[in-house]
Amino acid sequence: MDERKLARGIGWLSLAVGLQLVVAPTSATRPFGMGDSPTLGRIMGVRDLVVGAGLLRGDTRTWLLARGINDAADAAIVLGGMATGAFPRNRAPVGLTIATSLSVASLLLAGRLK
Image (cartoon, rainbow, N blue to C red):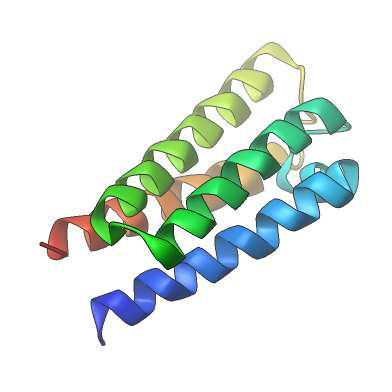
């Protein structure tokens, strides 16, 4: 598969997720184990919109690295919330798995691009 096309797909996904997080943050954070966290959701949404736009317009490798780091940070947030009881433990593993998987995928793809 063409790495640049895949990176663009990740860019569009970032825009879609970012928009969802900004418009309806609670409905977007709850399924991923982050409970009712509208402020956290909106912050993550704005960040995803910026990264998504960067992936579609700029230096793909750099923006993929940013995407991977952001997803790793999301995994750490979910893990911390799960460990402290701030987030519901029954849903947090879903968010942790998704964030970790997306982080690894973005970082591996960034490594393949020059």
